[in-house]
Image (tube, rainbow, N blue to C red; front, top):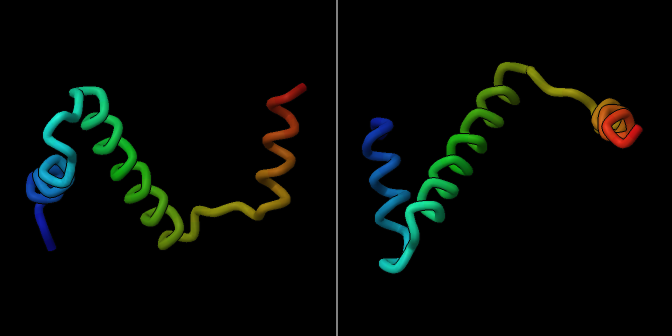
Length: 61
């Protein structure tokens, strides 16, 4: 398993040479969000599609 530093370095290296600071940070943040989502799913911290639909509806009110 790669260390956090190695994972971050791989993401940064995969970016185009002309990437901005903001673009690189966005990619790092996205990778972290995906990782957290997978961890949540593995731990059973999920909700149904119906529950998510209800939550989204409540945001619109």
